[in-house]
Amino acid sequence: MILENLEGKIIKGKREYTIEKKIGEGGFGVVWQAHTNDTTVAVKTLLPAHYGDADQMKRFIQEGEVLQSFQHPHIIRTHDVGSDQGIYYIVTDFIEGGNLFPYIRSEKKMNSSQAKKIIMDIASALDYAHTQFKIIHRDVHPGNILLGDNGSIVLVDFGLAKVMRDSPSDTSLDSAKSSTDSQSSDFFGNFSRMAGTSEGGEEASRHPRAVIGHRHYCSPEALRKEGVTVLSDQFSLGQVAYELFSVIRDKRLVRVAAKAISNVPQERYSSIKEFIAAIKAVPDYLSWLQQKSKTVSGKMLPKEELEEICRWGEQGYREELTNKSAIQAVLEQIWGTQHDAYLSMMTEVEKTLLKEGNALSAQNVEEIKRRILQVQNEILPPYRKIKVLAGQK
Image (cartoon, rainbow, N blue to C red):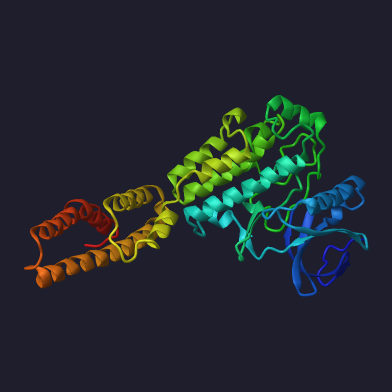
């Protein structure tokens, strides 16, 4: 008989894993926090109700074995798979942190740069699964995107994934339907909920034509049971991106995500790579200004550079609403350096005129006047604009 409570039990595989506590449970699996030597790991075991079902037990092991072959920085690492004392287990990294749901709900905050990175990292993980293994995840949602306290970003729970026998680039619904019905295998079986990933989700039915995955993030074609393709994963991630970008109030990124969640698959991005490129193409005003602030110290910038800083600052205010205070702080820093440079320049001019005024030629005097006039007419207007943007009076 398989014990329901494994706390304190030792599972022997490549190493010995001492179960500490249960950290999650879904319709088909339980996830435990465990340790081996000085390392904390996550151990997923098959629910006791599924023991005796040879098909489910075989698929559980198959899931783990394929996950072991994944070598991608943003897919959960799997270290061990097998059975011990009748217990079927999969051992993965333990991610100290949480999932993306608190950010979607505005319980936690992030800026545009962080949001872009999360979506692009998970997109690259999906692209890897699609192109290298012909696997469609089918259950992308915020609960399956884990954010480690150490900065790691990983996609988990391939328990509902499906293998494509056709090329991943074949995105037609006709191909998708035939794949679902006959040309692809139900790769891992309709089970497996990693720790913390079933929040708000719907358990997959064991009926072969049931809707698979978290309904709110399922593509329209999946809900209609017309079959899924790589574009279906794009829709699910696009829905996550749309919600996340809306929460951080970045209008440009929301527009990018909107294309990925078109109800018509052919109107989405042609590939995950194209989706990534579209996100990457959106300027990051805060990062640009932060980088610029490192290069402006000790010199008065020319009019063109000051005007460019003004443009980026104004656009950042309009588009990166969550970053508004951070943008203002960077502009204040830039204004401070330019203010110091301007005062230094004017002080030098005054010293020159006082010390050498009588000895200066008419040509030199005219050059000094020209320089002062240039500062007043060209440099001071954008300089003052930056001052206003920075909140200085």
